[in-house]
Length: 367
Length: 245
Image 1 (cartoon, each protein chain N blue to C red):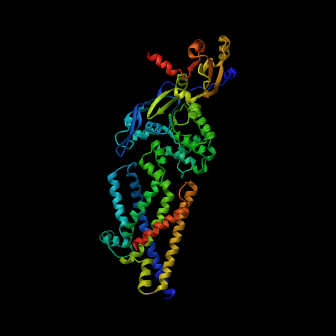
Image 2: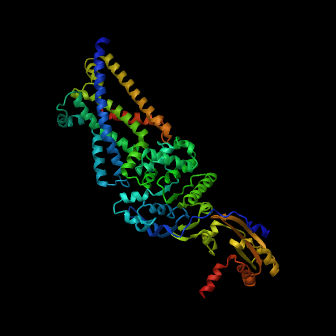
Image 3: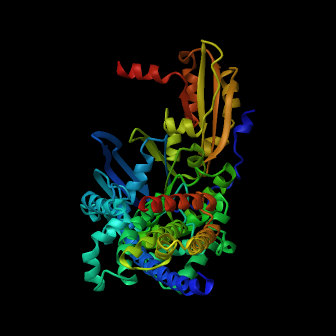
């Protein structure tokens, strides 16, 4: 059984990552308050976000958590009430000016930030090709230039044969591909994805996410996406942030998050279940990643200390391109009796969370 | 009255009606379209939000819409003389017809433009498009099927209004029906006029629906089908003509 938990050493690692340490999107103290009829609703409450160049960054949260306001504040479709937004070294909040209308500078900056939408937002009266040409028309490119670029982009998203179709003739997934091609027309460094897969079925969602991932790798495109689906974060994101009531409550790279004991996001990304069978037992969550994943630790533990280990639940999965295993095991005896075996596991470089023990540890720490 | 006597009267009346309706429609569309779009843009939450301008335009349009055409015609006489040099005749009738048509069409444009999905506006904003780009590339093209239906409705309403143009010697089919049919008891001529009007209106409605539908078929936007649209158009058209008469 423990052998199942060991990923084969030959597992293909994700293609060379394009992530660098430069921050391409930075928000600091971003606050958005909506006022309507004397009532104030705080959608964003001091959000600090740092998205590194070349990464896919997922912001996850339930509806009403402020994700939508956040992504709209990044290209200033919504004016933040306070705080700053910097994209590719340019302080957009400084460009915005006072009025509600976007000035020339801000519009130029926006044309270099691609955006895809949940409901695609394609013009129904234009063909697929003309839809992709629209941002190029706004940029003032010549007709020949536009159609060459549009066909090139449609080819990139795999819709070269649909150039003359109308959006109504396409499936949801195809429409989103057009949306992505259109978002790439201005050669953006940054792509904002507003629930791009939420209106799609699981199969199509996978193919669209794959496309985003490929574009991220091929073009070095930085992608900031918001979603309410954990699977989206799991399958494409390098980093993630969890939003609740207008605040970011947890953030980091997926690897960091999974290595953070008690991380809500990690638990949600990669849940294991299993109930304790009796009072005098210790339940441990073991997370395997990196080198530790290749050692037969459970059988070693059992042999070394001569204890019977029951496995309550186990799963192995790929999160953010990394293979990760998680197992919930039960040892006989209370926590105090198992300090040595737990130490043994920690020594092996495994991440151990003692289930139901966090509260106890906090109490001890307080003393 | 024999057919040979009626025929020249009818053909002249037809050409007068045609002229009045053609020119007044062109003016109503040319002025009503920007006005209707402005009504949407200046509204609360609109791209050019301006509550004062919105209220002013809205009021002007409301006054124009609520005034019975026959009174509008009398009230505008000074203005008509200033524009055309006369208050009598077909050309003079075009002025009040056009002025009456502008607010009518503007309201229809407003409704049509409001139906355009706000997501499309947001998409073009995210590409760096300005307000003018949004109007030109999103609002007008996306609302086009509705705008064509609105134009059809306006033409039909203006044909109704033009019947009253006889009061200022504007001529036309309505005037012919009143003068010969009602005042001279030429019932036959009146019925022929009514028949011609019915056929013309049906043809216009059919052409308008066809144009709107062919655009729809291409775009395939969901919304009320052409049948429903036709019903709606007839209702508004009929209601208006009724109120005026």
